[in-house]
Image 1: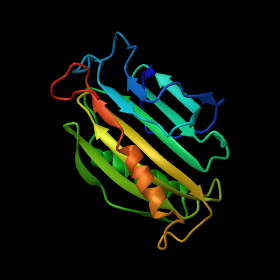
Image 2: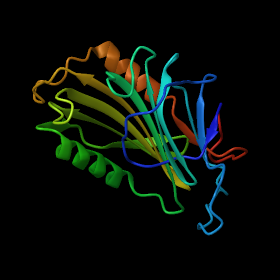
Image 3: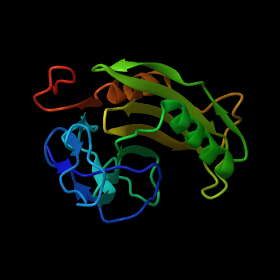
Image 4: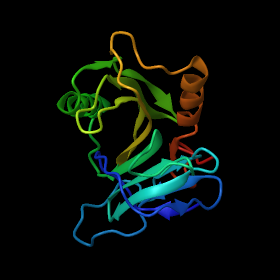
Length: 209
């Protein structure tokens, strides 16, 4: 595992590939600003996630209370990716609501795409914490000229929000018809997102795997 301080709700693509060590990623606050408002769990709350085997980092932005990592298959890059997993974390004593994250993601798709289709926010719990899932489909991204589809899993912890996104770039498509993703691809993505768990070490309420 590699502990990281992480978060943000942005997407940037670029940087030198780096092979991921080990099986899982753990994202936690490891450094903090002395002037920052204290976090309820002392910064120990962690996102544990198993990335797809063999995938590599193509972007990482670590900040004291935020961070983002992009992962792609070894034969792809940050510039011409077709498959990507994005992990984002925001450490804050007042985490935003899942509804706000869903609305922000949709607004960004609508700003970048000619046509957007997406499912509503589905809510539940993961390890005792509020969790949201939604999908978005972009028929044509005006920057890349490609279609783009993403599945999102967002978790609202006691001291932050954590977002894991599985995205595909495809040929442009009619959003009403949907992208050319197989049922197997969609199921694999859902299963991968299911490995993301937010926890607090040595906590009975939010135990770590």
